[in-house]
Structures are given as structure tokens and as C-alpha cells.
Image (cartoon, rainbow, N blue to C red; front, side, top):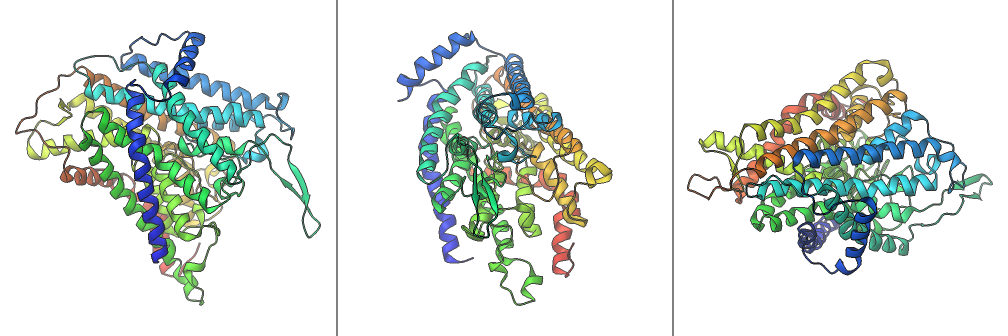
Amino acid sequence: MTSNDLMQLGFYLIVLILLAIPLGRYMAKVLQGEKTFFDGVMGPLERLIYRICGIDAGQEMNWKQYGLAFLVFNLFGLVTLFILQLVQGRLPLNPQGFAGVNWNLAFNTAVSFTTNTNWQAYGGESTMSYLTQMVGLTVHNFFSPAVGVAVLVAFIRGLISRQGKSLGNFWVDTTRVVLWILLPLSLIFALVLVSQGVIQNLAPYLTVHTLQGASQTIAMGPVASQEAIKMLGTNGGGFMNVNSAHPFENPTPFTNLLEMLAILLIPVAQVFAFGHMVKDKKQGRVIFGAALVMLVLMLGICYGSEIAGNPQIAKIGISTSSVMEGKEVRFGVVNSALWATVTSATSNGSVNAMHDSFTPLGGMVPMLNIMLGEVIFGGVGVGLKGLLIFVILTVFIVGLMVGRTPEYLGKKVEGFEMKMAVLAVLLPSAAILLGSGLASVIAWGTSSIANPGPHGLSEILYAFASCAGNNGSAFGGLSANTQFYNVALGITMLVGRTAIIVPTLAIAGSMASKKIAPVTAGTFETTSVLFSGLLVSVILIVGALTFFPALALGPIVEHLSMWAGKAF
């Protein structure tokens, strides 16, 4: 590691924390309905939305009503986006004259953007009209993270409620997240991106002539507006096929830094917001410490593996640190490794390098980040929910070890909560392993692999992990725009989204009805460094027990083969 690389990584983490702390305080005020400086503008707009949509802002919902509202809203968004893609060829704002999308790709994309996955089995600039990009994809980029935060708020209310049944109002929570948090941040960020050269227009594509005399088509479009919310909402779906490796999406080192900061900004801020909302900042700091330790650990493995490179290349006299195949030459190895780590630590999924070209262990890091449940801060809303699920698992395991009744925030963790927590962990994991296993043994799955051997298995594993984890990044090398993969991965995304949100709401409903017990000598402290370490251990052990056999057949055996001089 060079001193320059170390300075860049340290600078990134310091700036991220300094920005996240005040944002977390602001988010807590918004989510608790307290006064903020945006009230004068957003308040009347909020009330107008309720009036138009017929929403009773004062209606309280139990966990089943909240969950039903979530399912209905997502189903409506999915169907609407599906139909929009099918008929886009007959609609305006389509200067390229793109035809309607075929049904299986339309299904995959509709599920993808509704579930905050943003998996793209298509080239955005060659498939989707401006109308589909703006009204379909970008709008979902606002709603899907807002839904995630809304469910998080409901979960927190369940943890701190004093024998109530209400978790709030789904429609109010979602609206406030969009108006007070996502919209202002995205507007500011989009303007900054435009100032740096990210394009924002509705012009037809340009045809230019190269120095060799060939013709080349240069895509135009409303890129900055989608870029801003795709980062801040941990969506990740790019306007361009190569995502943030494209200079129209990510033109300068400054935008590269800003976009990486935007990926983790709200996920880190919501951890601090949690501390404010439960009236115990130490609880937020413990979770922050655990997530930060895992982030640094994964970043160290990814960067170390990439800077070491392939020893077979070194044997022919080429410096491994200078091999940039698959990486963004403008930003270097360190920024490729950093982006890959943070985008998979959250549910963002954007890329500025091709993970398929990473070393085996370097490519395993983003894969493992997703398999762990994307709880290394994780996506907007869903990441902290996943962390809190592991917190519940940890207090239960610790309670069994020391013979104490497991409690969290003064409430007992009992059988029902544990069943729901285990479901939230197991169902996405089962979707990854069962889907990958099926795709590895049938012709519909193996015919899309570009590389044989363990690397081909890694491509399949990554695809199902990315979709089950609602991440959306692609390992590369897998031709996923087929009927089999569009349908199979679409179903996997639905399982990954609902399998954690519905059990989470069930836990919230159960916890909301319980008494808050006073702290006694038998209460295990959940604000200590010891508990933070136990939380990290539980997350890593559960991940290892679940996925080590699959990883051993993919990136691990490929790594050992690389050192033995064998290529695939």
C-alpha cells in the first residue's frame, strides 16, 4: 500500500463520517415529525399530496396493515413500470425510436427497480426511452429507498414503543422521506454533477466521425438527475451500460469521490439517526463501530488482493500493480477497490470497474459483502434493518451463553422474534444457493457462462447473490438477458426484498406490544465494545457457515489455482 493510497482511503472515511453525523441528526428529526428548515416548503406540498391521494395522515397502522400497504404500493409500481416498458415505442420522449421491451426483460427490470435492486440485464442507452428512464426508472429510484427507510422507522417504533400496536403510517413515512430527505439531497447533488460535466438533456443521440473515418453514436440524455438519486438512494442503476465507468456519468476524480461518498452517506447517517431516535446515542455508535470494522476489513482484503495482482503476470516481468485491465484508468486501483467495496457493502450496485476482471479474492469481497446480507451499513433503510436483525440474533445467542433472558432496548427477545429473525436471514440465503445450484446444472443456466471452471461458478453465484441481496451490481461475463435468467433473477429479487421486510415488520409488531423492563444487574449491556465485537463475530460466522462451501468451489479454488499457475 502506498502512502498516497492510504491518504485517499483515510480522507474518504473521515469526510464520510463528518457528513453523516449532522445528516443523521436531521434524519432523526424528519422521521420523528419534528420541525426542520424545509417545513415551510415541503409542508404544504405534503398536505397537497395527501389531499390528492386521499390519505388520512392521522391513521395509525399495526404491522399487518403497514405490511399490506407496502405490498400494495410495490405491486402497483411493478405493474406500472412493466406496462410502461412494453408500450414505450408508442409514447413520446423517445427520439431514438426504441421499441417496446420484450416481456421477460420488462418483468425483470420492473421487479429490479421496484425492489431497489436495479439489476440491469440491458444497456440503458440502447434500450430505454427518455420517458422510461425518467418516469419509470428514476421515479422508482426515489420510491424504493423511501419505502426501505419507512419500514426501518416502523421497526424502530416497535422497539421503543410502550405497549402499543401502532407502527405509524406507511404513506406518511414514505412521503416524508422523499420530500424532506431524498429530493433536496438529489437536487443539490445533481446540480453539482452537472457543474462537473455530467450531461442532462433531452437531445437526440449524436453521430460523429472518428479520426479513422468511422461513424460513432454518442448517447445523450437526462443522466445527472438519475445519477444523483441512484447514488443517494443506493439504487445503482445507471443510464449508461457501463455505469459509472462512463465519463458522462462520472467525468472527474472529484465526481468519483462525491459519488462514492453519496453511496454510503445515508446508510451511515441512519445509524446515527437510530441513536437519536432510541434516545441512546451509544446504541448507534456500537452498530456504527461494528459496520466500520467490517468495511475496513473487506476493503483491506479487496485492495490488498488487487494491488498484489496475479503472480503469473509478475513472472513475465510486468508489475502487477500496473495491470489495469477491467479497472478505471482515470482513478487507479485504490479507487476501483474502494468503489467495489462500498457499492457491495450497501445495496447500491453501481460500478466504476468490472468485478469480473478482479483477482479471485478481490472479486470475492463484493460477493461476500452481499452474501452477508449487505449489513456493512447496507442500503438505505434495509441495511440498518438487517443489522438490527443480527443485533437481535446476537443478544439471543449471548443470553443463551450466559444464562440470561435476552433483551434489547429493555424488551425481551422471545421465540416469535427469533423465528422471524431466522427467516429474514435464511430466505435470501436459500434463494442465492438454490438459484445458483439450479443455474449450474441446467443448460439454460450454463449456456450463458463466458468462462469455464470456478470463475464461471463465481459469475452465477454473484448474479443470484446480487439479486437476492437487492444489490444489482453484475460480476460480468454472464449473458443474463435470457428468458431463464430474467425470470429466475426477477423471482430472486422479490424473495430478497419481501423475505426481510415482512419478518422485520412482524418483529416490530411483536416488540411494540411488550413492556419496557428496567435495567437490572442481569441485563447484558449492548452499548459496549464487547457487544460490538460479538455482533461482528455473529455476522461473519453466520455468513461463513452459509456460504463457505459455495465460495470454496468458486473464488477460493480459483485463487489457489492462480498461485499454482493454472488459468481458466
